[in-house]
Amino acid sequence: MKKKLFGRRGSITVFLCLILSAIIVLESIFISGAYRRKREVILTEAVNHQAEQIMSQFNKDYLDWYGIYALDSIEAGSSVFETMTSGMEETSFQYELTDKIGPEDIRTSIIDFMKLRGIAFEGHGIIERLGASLKDLSRGTYNTDKLSTWLPKFKKYVQNREKYSFFWGIVKKICEATGIEDKVQEFTNFVDQLDDVWRADSSAAFQAGDTSIVLSIYDPTCVSTIAGVFDRYLDWDMPALVDRFLINEYASFSFDSLVKSYEDSDEEEECNILGIPFSDIHGENRLDLEYLLVGNDSDFYKRSASFGFLLGTRLILDLSAFLMDSGKRKLALAIAEVMSILIMVISCFTVIISPRVLQFFVIFAMAYIRAFSDVLKLTSGKTVPLFYNDKVTSRLGKFADTVYRDYYRVFLFLVPEDKLLSRMQYIIEKDCGEDLYTGVRATGTWKDVSYQVERRYSLYENES
Image (cartoon, rainbow, N blue to C red):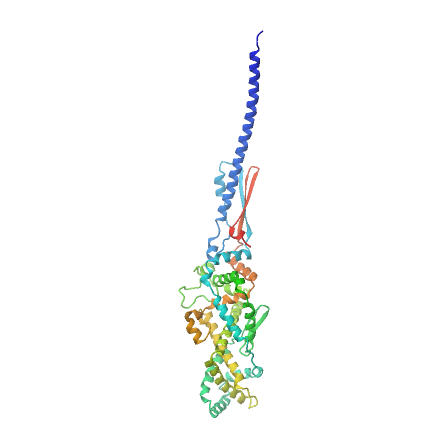
């Protein structure tokens, strides 16, 4: 009987065909999946790299001007994405800037920027010295009941000496009779200086918290109020001030002020921390430093408030120095003796004020005159000794000299941190001319596959 060899071989062939068909189909699916997976990986990498390329386009001017990393309305395009996905059909790429910059981002930027630069702008010494002056000054109380009535009349006679020459003649005769004629010239010099200040209408008002404080040469007691305000704000623990101190130093040296240039400075005009002139940033000075203090964009308001704060601070410092200076006290008493006679004469001998009472007013007026002069110097870019005391000034030398911005290192502590940061954000955005962002959201699409990635500068991701 013959064996059916050919039939058996045919069945094997059919079996092999079925197996090979299954293998081919399986391989095709595997290859197609691998191909698709490869395209998805390319898409993912393309979106990631394009997002990184967008993040690298931070505005370098803003980094130079204010030390912040930020994105603005850039036209980044998609060149990286298109290059990496070349050969892939039906691809598209879109992006949008995210995480609009806010006060907390500004704070993070400042702390990071100032950690290595803060020592160079270290200024806690001025705070300590000012605090010591306030404590010495705030202990005193002064009797000014009669002065409040007679100071306006005294001003009238001072500014019209020719008209009232008869009274001045009587004063000189009484001074000669009492043996103090040598003090008349000192009194005359004092009156001339006082008259100049009165004619300049130098009284100033400034806002401190919810209180408006008026500085007037008619009201010596205003010093106690100023001392109380400043002392309350400066009585903080230094460890809690580390970050705030860096923020204050940054604010004090990163924004323009009403002083366009400083005497004895190598720079021809005001510059920021990195030496970039403010005119390169926004042209004319806008008094941004003063805005940080008062929060009002009116030039008149900013100038007035700055003058008031400076006058109040200098008045405290100068009055403290004069009260501790025995020479100034003797001079003030000599002037007060003549002034007492003058008041007695113009009141027809009905009002007698002790020279000891008038002595404080004279010292106050001398300090006010000096403070007014100091403010004019500071606002014109000149230096002023921190403390008018021969011993202190001689020991400290140039270190005792202060400039306009030194006082803002203290003044800005009066502004709550959140307000200060918001005001800085306002100024920065005004210079940038548009909103600023710290992140990007990028989306790439290939056929029906979409991949999205979000990126943000690591500096801001670590905000506490």
